[in-house]
Amino acid sequence: MGKFLTDFKEFALKGNIVDMAVGVIIGGAFGKIVSSLVNDIIMPIVSLATGSAKFSDLSTTLREPVKDAAGEVIQEAVTFNYGMFIQNIVDFIIIAFSIFIAIRMAMKLKKKEAEPAPEAPAEPTKEETLLTEIRDLLKQDVSKK
Image 1 (cartoon, rainbow, N blue to C red):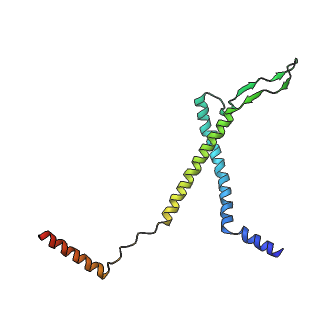
Image 2 (spheres, rainbow, N blue to C red):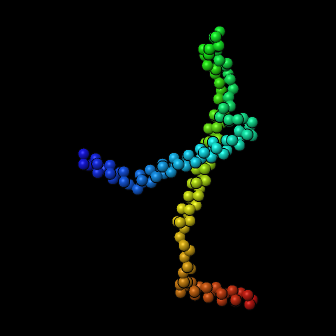
Image 3 (cartoon, rainbow, N blue to C red):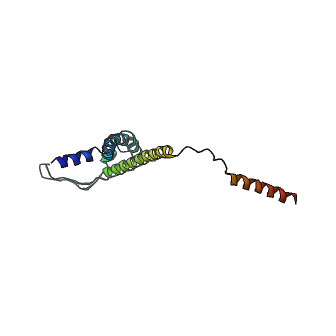
C-alpha cells in the first residue's frame, strides 16, 4: 500500500497534472464567458435580424397533437426543432473562434519569450580581415582597367 500511495503522490504532484487542472478550471470559466457572449449578446441580435423572439424556439410541426373528444392531448405533437440546432452551431463557431484567438495570442507570447536577444556581431578573424583586404584590392585593380 505504501508504494501505491508514493506512486499516486508522485503522479498527482507532477507539474503537468497541476497545469492540466488549472487549464480545466480556467476552461470552465472561459466557457461560461463565451456562453454568456452567445446567449446574452450575439443571439438577441441574430433573433432580431431573423424576426424571432427567441432563436432557439424555431421549429416546424411535423404532426399535430392528437386530442380526444374532451380536448385532452392523447399524443404529443411531433416537431422539428431546427432553431436549437442552429443555436448549437452558432455556439460552436463562436467557442471555436474564441479558443483559436486565445491560443494564437498565447503562441505569439510564447514565441516572443523564446526568441533570443540579437547577438552582437562577432569580431572578424584574422583570415576574414585578410580576405576582405584582398577582395578590396582586387576591386580597386579591376576598376583601374
